[in-house]
Length: 97
Image 1: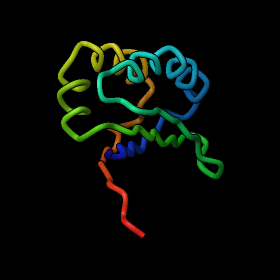
Image 2: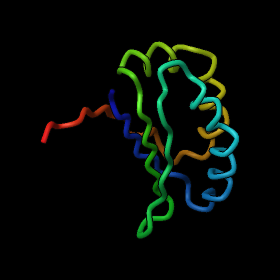
Image 3: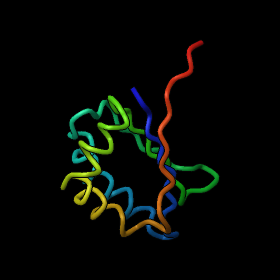
């Protein structure tokens, strides 16, 4: 399992529109093959900053099963207009304790 972490800065004043667009777009992402869970969080000190957390079966599941499909275009079409800039996206794996 890998965790996708996307730091999303939204254009100030678009926060409500972004959260409404995310509500519409979430099922598109959540329905992608290999997607295990989806969670969006919002900054307390920086309310225009959001963090998207997605658990995937693998990096390939994210890249091939989502980003290279029409689902990604639909997802980005809904939420992308509210971005202040390109999101910073990275993948992480758990560290054994």
